Image 1 (cartoon, rainbow, N blue to C red):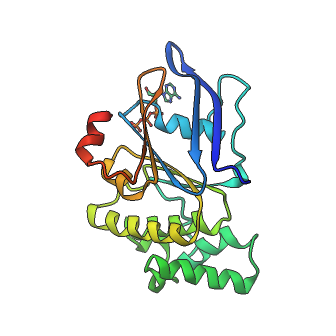
Image 2 (image 1 turned 180 degrees about the vertical axis):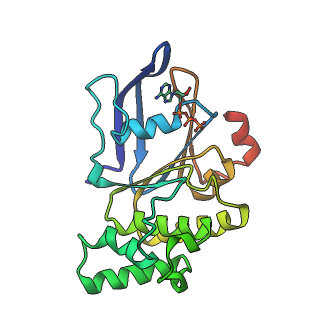
Length: 225
Ligand SMILES: Nc1ncnc2c1ncn2[C@@H]1O[C@H](COP(=O)(O)OP(=O)(O)OP(=O)(O)O)[C@@H](O)[C@H]1O
């Protein structure tokens, strides 16, 4: 039977006297959206960075996730300014699909997030919301097993954020990935997550693990943080 969890064991990280993680373990649900909530500075980004190998664990015992299995959606997009929208997307997928497949899959995602009409535009002509939607397509056209999202909606206005979160939710219904999602925004967590981890204390502990199908309110979660 296929394993339903990704178990991460033995995270250790200190910055001088600040012992952030000490023998920390966490198990993420496979093909679900796993959201990490916690106070500012508690260590959310560091956790994702250690898991993905971007930041080194202090001990050698951690098995990190291989880079080729991961795609990223960060707060700031990584679009290439001298390529148009379509080219920005295709450059990520060209190693994995033939020409026709790539055309189809590119159109599929552009349709899915409602920006097909911008296909030939260059990034500098586009708003932050549209740029972030291209960023999302780039993360999904790459055939990763894991999508890491670190505060992806932080610089997006409220209205666009809602649209983009809906786009993302629709993509994830059809294109299952294990998502590791860091945010400080409870509403984002409630809208997107299947599972919510609340981190606290230093060294970090998991204060609560919540299956997001039990109708907790924003206020109830706020009290747990
Ligand atoms: N390279 C570093 N050198 C020293 N301290 C660091 C370094 N990176 C992170 N820290 C410290 O580790 C702690 C956790 O940082 P991290 O960015 O992981 O927290 P976070 O929960 O993601 O914060 P936020 O919600 O504000 O983004 C903070 O106290 C931070 O100052």
